[in-house]
Image (cartoon, rainbow, N blue to C red):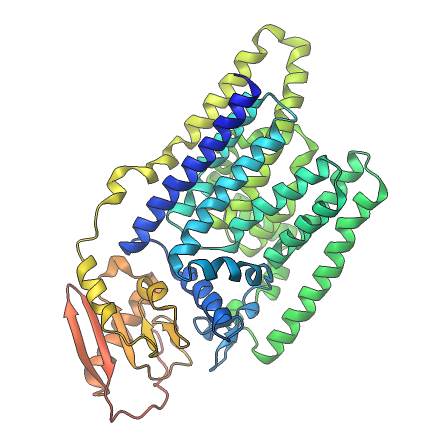
Length: 475
């Protein structure tokens, strides 16, 4: 296949992938079958930016023991979200963020192809791109919520591309954008310095990203300290203490080799990502991998998106080194072995393509009832609702989920879904043990809608707006 033909094929694949995954993700969202918890948080923060409430969110008050709204930066110091605001203004709806995350993965795939073909043939680089796109972490964009993690591969790949082309200013710009995406990405910047040193780059390439990591890391730490001083995180949400406890060698070994050992090993096998160990570039993903183990986040969905992407980034380099090694001893079958590895990579990832099966485009039988209930909620009123409804209600100042059982105030509307399959385990418990009896027995709410397990309640005009009694889960 000619290089220009391969380039056109890569672009066509990326565009088709972005469109198809966006269609499936949008359908899942509009049919209320998409994982949407964090989508509502991002949507409310961005909507607030457009309406004078800079980075204001009300969905995670409980995580920082605050009765008032908190800044999104209390959750993650991610200034890049501010840069997303102009994009969000074009389509100021959760649907815009859903399309964006799918296009980000497609863009990362195209960048991966451009970087890879400098190490291996265009056809081989195209296969690596395909392996990345069909990997479980990439395809999680179809069913997972919106997360800033999906920006990580794009910014890192762009920075690495300019590093290989020795264009310092755009490299530093994209390295900075990468760091600004999430505070947990900052340690990865040091791997640029290591790679520059190994590659024999000049001092500015070695010291530039390291200095950026130190300066921006200090700013992020100071900002989080200030924010947490005003709204301290609850014990379960204090990531600093969790990280200190989880980064010990014993803790890391237990997390890798315990119950998740098979899952952790399979992560390297899928997509032939184990080829990353044939190059010292595997150091790119080590910091993120260690942090994930320390925080016990696992490597599924968006949690493993960056790690998986960095592994695929190193695959062309690993293939290049493997071919050099094989050419010394097994010249006649080198191409066959490489082709076999590609086939193995595709077969081990093929199962993840099931998410694009047409059966996932079946309509939700309760869709009409869900939309009918939402249509009765006042446009500027305060609402507490089951997680599945939150993104549709995010264009308002006061919004909360049901399973946040502390710091509750009376809301004008309560929207609950009594279908257990549509609730998270924690949410289902609080719905059954607190909300359902409270709404029926308190006399403060009147039922406006009740159809197919969807119930909407409205606060009576004469009900006093005092704080609710704190709910204590049964032991």
